[in-house]
Length: 266
Image 1 (cartoon, rainbow, N blue to C red):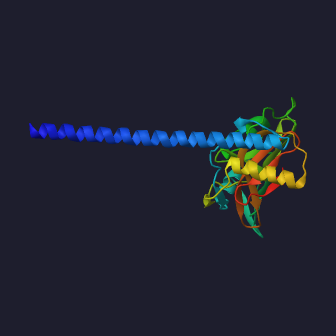
Image 2: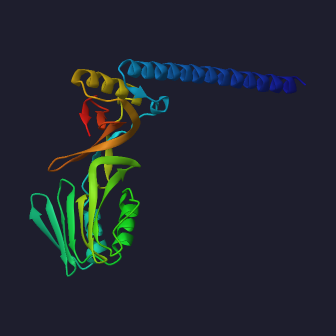
Image 3: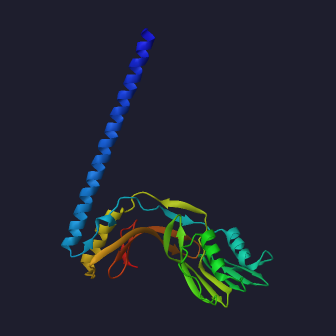
């Protein structure tokens, strides 16, 4: 009998602890929501005082992506070349971080900076080839590809971990339903997180933008959008993706660097 009572006491105690923890968690969440709501209202009012319209929906509190350092992947470069030039490739190291692959179908050139170009007779049905490239290598697929004759130039923006990479694109050139060139920046999948702490939130980025606008006197009537993205920064040997907030306005777009708070024109 004593054992039975003891078990009931333990169960009741655990239940009370759970209720207390849930209540504490609920209070914290309610406080956080209230704080975010207050911050949102203050930002909207602050922008309005400066003559700039800001929608409450453009103020959010999700963290930006972490900064990434990309490592060159020569095997992936060769694999990409083989997709369009076939497996029978002749490889050559041209020095200075430049690797080339050639076949009877054309040539591919890859640089340590990430720049690449593949030229030649790269295959028929260029729209289908472009769509496959976008699926396999993380690019935004456009609504329209080439014209009715299978000719034209199409440029797509690259993505990394689902975020758009500003200043990083791939261009496809086709003529008479034959793909003749692909060029742009090749982003390797090998990466390491180089910074993830103390990055600017969206609300802080908006404050930094408003301060920069006040200093520069830029003419902006409304902020019409805000989203996280990456900016590509490349040297001869290193590719870095810097987390950035892109502010869409009724005049021009702006970037706010999540690490430094610097505000620049898109």
